[in-house]
Length: 312
Ligand SMILES: [Zn+2]
Image 1 (cartoon, rainbow, N blue to C red):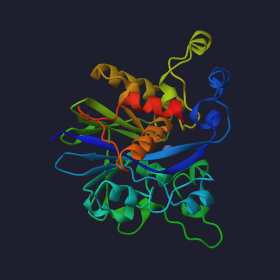
Image 2: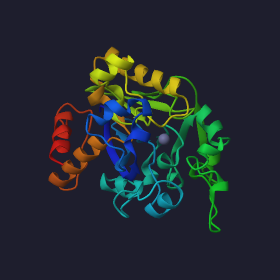
Image 3: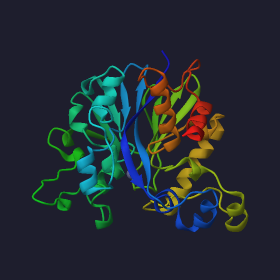
Image 4: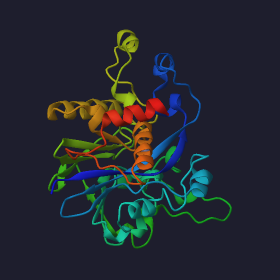
């Protein structure tokens, strides 16, 4: 059986487009597209890879609303019993204990919550990310839930550092195949040890890019921006290394082109608002089912999602 991908949205996080989505140098050009700096709710996707010998999950998503609001960005929204990863898995017929492998694109808080529920899974991340998550600069303490951020007598332990979880982590470096049809490559810039998961399907490869492409607009360039600034992408606003972030986006687009697939259709972003609108529309019209991506006869394609956004 061929591999397929199911998008599981773990909730919504507010972000300021002109601070998070795009680098400040893009402001003038991006504003012309009608994008303002007003807080915009972005989804927080994890991706379930089915059809192989092993059940594989890419990331585990964000915390419950109260926790996310108190320590990260509010007002966020994780609907209890609907959006949390356990409920999302139940929606497609699984329990956390059914998952065999979890590949973490990176260890930011909104990609790692509830990992302790996956007691049977191999937990895999990039070696550099693990090192940085345990020794970040203060700017990133919250992103990795360093214990020092605790307030009001709370005790904070990063999800990946919980006893029974921490010891189980396995580390990868560079580019490698994890399972038949599932490989990873390094995609740094958003954070030091980010990795992208490539899934080979009957529709070609799909790239679970995590936050390395923050919004789909990062891979495009408005004409006036290209003419005046010579940019070949629209760089993101949130990064630790803009040179690496830029080269990662270029590299990811190049990989799509080499594989003969359209990056607009084959990049699975963790925070893709277009995908979220489409998935919600699909759920509403398909009896609360979630779409399957990477299958030839799927009734969910890119055109469906474009329309979902236009009608929203
Ligand atoms: Zn992140």
